[in-house]
Image 1 (cartoon, protein in one colour):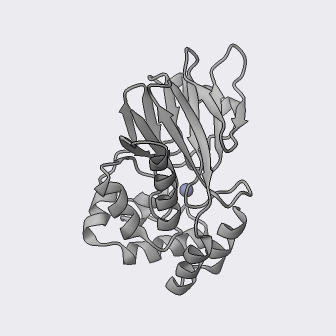
Image 2: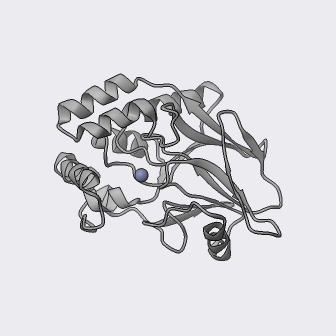
Length: 243
Ligand code: ZN
């Protein structure tokens, strides 16, 4: 079984289509898992929801999904994110809004737990330190967990000492063995590590390994759509630099 793992697609249809095409070019993709923030920031919330739902993707909710679907208010969001939440809420079809509002915060699939932020704060915590990784392992009931929210690709392994967050680069692979792991596929629709290419992760159960990838996509097209939609211009500009 090959699984394409994405997070933080943020209504960026071109990025999502590019990573799915890349994953499918290497063989059949049997499942798609998405670690939240399906919508928000980007110009195509309905098309992205449609693509993931149509593919039967396993999805959980991120903060943007809950705010745009009206499950929670946007008081915790900065002004730019808030503007995007309001735009997305108005753009979403009733059907996709209801689907987003019903997404669970945590899901377990085989050896993996999927959550947006962290297990102690599923929607809001940015898991970015060894100390936070320790707290995650304390709550993690499966060998591996997948988190998003920070829009950074990394892994952390449970060892004797304090876990370290190790950045992942395009083409990096990691064998799945005894050590418990936290894995972040990166923010497919809005990378924040200075590389504008869309990130994702691939899990191959026959190879018992995960790998990280970066895929070029038509950033200019997404930027033009963001501008045309009247979303904050910074949301378009940041895609060009991956910040
Ligand atoms: Zn996000």
